[in-house]
Length: 417
View 1: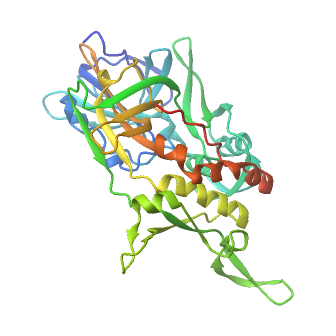
View 2 (view 1 turned 180 degrees about the vertical axis):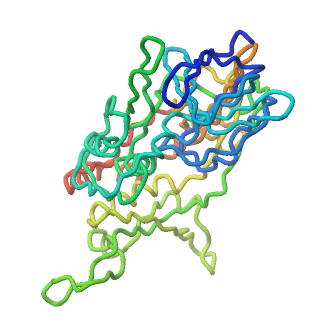
View 3 (view 1 turned 60 degrees about the vertical axis):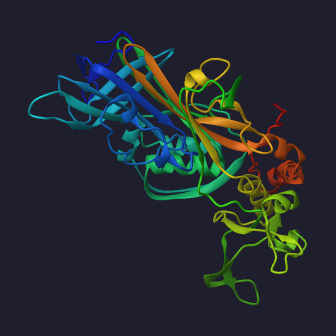
């Protein structure tokens, strides 16, 4: 067994110790944030000479894929648990599929132990004006998982009806706008607790820098297919039908809009983006907006809907770009999932300067550790600094928090690279 391959402690589905499961060849660990909009375009495990298994059966809550793949001589059973040390943290994966030829090695595909939340059920929960920690506690109540920590602020609400706990966890991360990671505690050679850390954002800013076209062994730049919009219509909850006295009479009519708090128009636009990414009118006398729409079916307040639509526009005005690179290409050291990276792309006119996140990491543990990452752009720094839209979004933060105590995530200041 290669020296860099982690030791896999092998347990059955009831957490009884089976021993150590030796890996033959290399072990590939793939982890991905759900925020990557083009997950099917991600790095391929074939690059590490392992058979690519099917995609995970579900998307983890704001933590897209977390899987390991390897080959071994012994055959673990479906549902068996694999515990391994990854630097300073413990990881636990559950065997979900094995390929067992009559002759040759067994191929194993295992997912994060968060997948066991698929087997816990929530009949009906109405979360009204709850904090993120309270919502997490409700979701995890029927499970054996707990809340390790929560730094997500604000209050919000949603309805969980006839769903499994994993789906509910994903819903909470969407509504309260955070990201989760599992926390596995080990003592005495076995897992003693399983918990979830709910964070505003995974990863950190460590000064990492990537320059497109500089000393690259391998790099693929992908401009994604998502449309770019310079203006957005925003729609909220369907409004109930009432009689002349305001009594509910059954049924719903058109969706909530925000024209009453936005000068009579139900859309917001970015004038700087219109000049750069708009289009000519029929007479070619003026550049006009490219319109899109966004929906917030849980929003029932026009002012909050306006703020949420403005925040969505901040992202919609930019083309989505990703870079798949060898981690050795980064200046500044190692990186983890969710870390922010400064990107300079001098192949564009004018030069692109981006702030991006590590949205996918693929590591092959063999004779050495080979690491590749996908960096997905968040926003163009130079553009965001000058855009009036960014200031508008920041100015609305306090207003939104005061409307229903459900704060929109604070826009972090972006320094020029």
